[in-house]
Length: 610
Image (tube, rainbow, N blue to C red; front, side, top):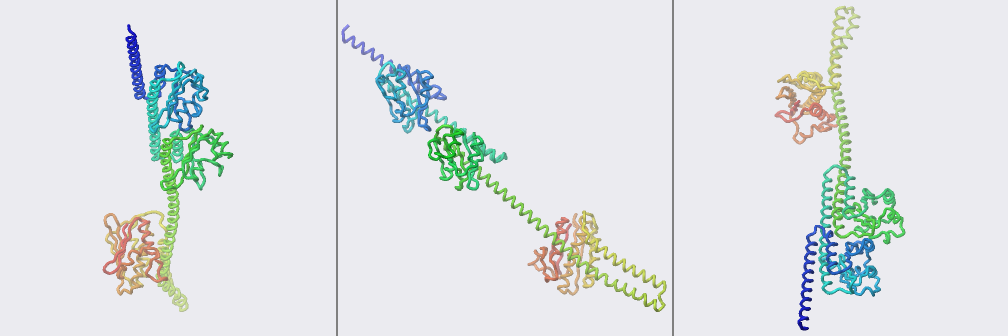
């Protein structure tokens, strides 16, 4: 075999080996990419797939880190070729203290060769594992920002080939896509959980569980949404923040921030500046340096804090929603977006509840004022009725005086005759008996008048059935002489002798007030042939009484005022203006009837329906 033939065979074998390697590399990439894209959770397959790549590249170790945006450090995610002891040592890395950190900081690959002769402190950890060649690729996000790193280390060579580096980069790119998908899915799940919780909280608004349980539920939701350990919800009362709900705090913490004034606090700072305040670590923040608040925060295990002021849609500050973490932390924008949604919901809840409370207090004040005003009006009505009764009583006393005048005159003449006849010797037994009998008749008549007067003003205690005709006749008997003295003709038309259920004496008093009003109108206007016509009858199941006069009627401009208290067309010393008001009160309020008035061809007609 010639030298050229041997060369051709060797070259062909190299080509075949390269082709086989390329096919294996392509198959590995296809399998890796497919597994990363189809896995329910890429985290479950990252370690297995990267180990396959490590073995294909004949590497001793691989490390996968994810960048924690809150701490700015690399957090261990997966590894291969090292035991758990080493994994624990590399769990959390400073960016400036490792080769992976350099790759993440600069967003570019770091390829370290011949590490056995290197004294770079950043490579001390991998050198301790016997690594001689080390390549770290950044995991890049959509804006070419670093989200983590993927690195491989070999102990059998001092460098990697370009094909090896290209394979590592391709795998790193797809691991980055998988981690971004995993992060997006976690955020979607967190969004769904947060929105579900807020929807449930909205449903609670329709229930009557009370304000405080809703505040506590909102506080718990805030802590859960941002992954915090603790939190407080404070409302502004008289320019002072008061804790109304909390999560995870003990009494000493609550007592300190509830009682102390002008103490250093993130919530107070947020309230003062009117915007959210985030403190990554209270230990190195100047707000708490040398203040009494710092030992309290330490004792409560609080290291990081954010406070979001709660403003209404109109811009009024209601309070502050605060969440706290037990390690240095900066919440990402997505967490804060969810928190803002909850803060808006909580603000609406608080504003609505405060408005309802103000409305409730206003209603209580209004109800109290209405009750007081009602009591005043009832007292006023009572006084009007008393005045009406007193006016009627004065009227009745005048009637009694008029009715007694003639009997008293007759009685006086009879008594004066007795001594005169005795002196003349003409006082016989028969005349004496006649005089006594006549005197007793007069006295009985006067006594009956007093009884009628007394019964008329006796208050009714219960509803009774009474004859409408008899009650009208009784009322006329009390004022009849007075009407005859005024030469007023009275006509009573009994269409039906109806039975009325109600208070008889009050009904009679209402009739008397209407009769007195008719009498006064007739005498005041000097009607030549004054007349009052009273009619009683039934209309369906109602008893109807009408009292009409021929005094010319009521002027239209005052028709709607005549039942008002103290309204009168008479002079200041001629009428109290409560008679018709009292009559309407008795008929409508006390007996559930109706009293109206209208003008007829000759005068006014009052109509009672009971």
